[in-house]
Length: 380
Image 1 (tube, helix red, strand yellow):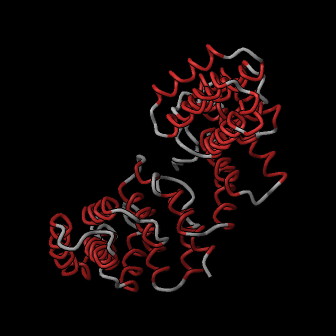
Image 2 (tube, one colour):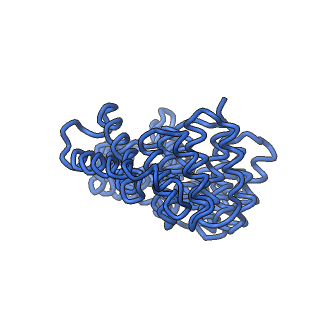
């Protein structure tokens, strides 16, 4: 199972970036406070104020020029410190975290300020060393992930969870580290705890939205899209169209039509969209054709999977369950079992559906089936 989005990339957000933002505020406060302003000569104070204003306006060149002017005029330790603090502020605003860190290093800034800047600058060894001194565990773990050291990152997250077992961010990042390690058993346990603590649509989307882009069998991807629909994780027109296309190709054309129509009604897809209308028209024809032969096909294990797909697409869940049961004796038993479980759940038998999902223990359908089982267990 692919897990994308668990790592916090340098410069793209997450706790290290928020820590850098806090440091940014501290820097400007330190460099422009009333007491410090009184200790600065006009030759230093005025260009520093100009640098701050230029940086806020996004004029990095003017801000750096003003910093150079103030640095040339600085005579006292207090003035040189103020120049370095404002320079670090300017460089941080400009996204030049390495130079910001260098400015603060020169004046002996505390590790708590330096660690997030090192992280954003991709200086991960320095970030880890500074974060250890300042107790910034998330920066340590995220730095290890960026260095492709998931085992070391997992240890840090486990330490964080020992202190706070319900830390959702730590659980999600631990799952990412465990997946990168290839420890599927530990990963599965962490995901189960995460979703049991927070079975919200946002949490499900964070788990599923990128997974759909990973290599998997067509039937597994279709099962994943069904779970995205079930958990409210489908949010974009592209996801709707991709789901519909996979459903049509897999013989669930009725579901393709339903998904597109529902997306138009909810506003995910604009009304009158030509591509969506083409999908609806194609799906309606294929669904009608499949349903004509489905009753006969449902009696033969070699063709019953297609019949079950036709019935599921039409919302005829008892007929789908019966067809999939026959199909389990055919060439693709796990796909038949997965969709029998989905049909059973949609027919209102949640406990029975979970029992079916739990029967798939290996092969390309196992991970998607495990997620369906988890979803079934988190619903009332």
